[in-house]
Image (cartoon, rainbow, N blue to C red; front, side, top):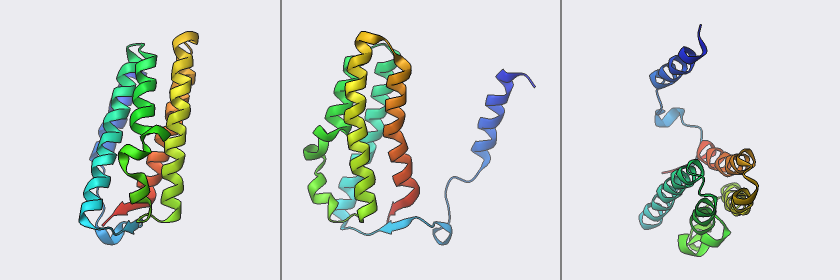
Length: 147
């Protein structure tokens, strides 16, 4: 089969899988927190997703410094105060805290790599650093869920 046909077929097959599990089939650790904190955490995660999209758009446009700025301010260690991380941590199990911290650290490292890419034009290095951010997102969402 021609390579250009394989990817759309795989994508279509993935779309046919149920993406939600019944509560009894969901083996992720359920995190219970007050409604206000839950709302805050979900807003943070939506902003993280938007930041990732903005970073990808900036990388695609060759705007590496812009990608670095978004990464540090919205995802990196510099974002912890804005996101209220110290207030949220007490509601998270240790493993979730560690995964979150690893994501924030990886985002700060990505920001440095993106700035270097503005000079080196080594896009694969920047993309590799960005993937080390998103691997933490995937790990957390695969392990934990909010009640």
